[in-house]
Length: 288
Image (cartoon, rainbow, N blue to C red; front, side):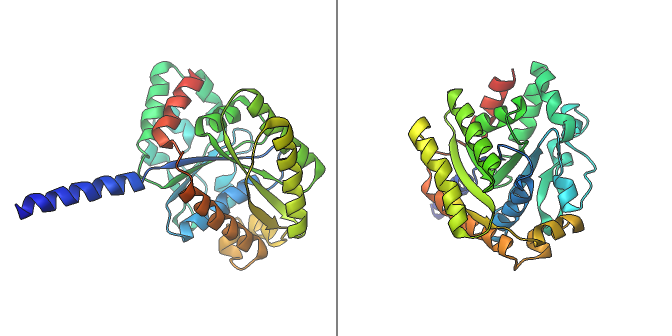
């Protein structure tokens, strides 16, 4: 009897652990290039790791895939090897500094639009194996609204938009949000303002986007936080070492750490996340 009770408890705990291990899908994007989106994606992932979460960064920028360059870890395999059936999902996952897992993208995403139904099924099946393997998959998309970027954003449904205080960056960030809203997609947006001179500038930039989005689109867009302008960022890029490793006490690293803490707080309060299985269903629908 005791053995049966113990077995039942083990089963319940296993199911609880599986549920707690559900993989969350987040896309990180921007209205224009040059705002520091990929740097944010990378160091945001590392900040989540520092807090005990496992993260996989998926480089989904078809034009300027550079996560492996920023990590200083040339990728032996990338997405194209998976799409051609030459490698499994486990074989294309690379490890960078700090043990961060990543998948290099490159031109592979362009081939997604030409996949046969059988190839798309294989792609979805392989991605599906990641369920429970990591807590978060971060898709670092291309800037702007390419077809591939739109598909990943709408499949994931949760998107962090990175902008800067520059007027063109603000305008393009709003244009991206507006376009996705006009297409009828229900997406949960969150905002990060990079390269701010001080908190006041960050708040003003965020408020400009939030107020217009609320007035004309009926959207409430939470602000995850602000990242101070920091010369150490460009130094880390030149070293091909993540900022959080090269300059762990820099103001930009601390800013990203605060954003990660805020994100996890929001994540605990958010019960609407649909997880990897729903993401894969939408990917197959959007690409077929």
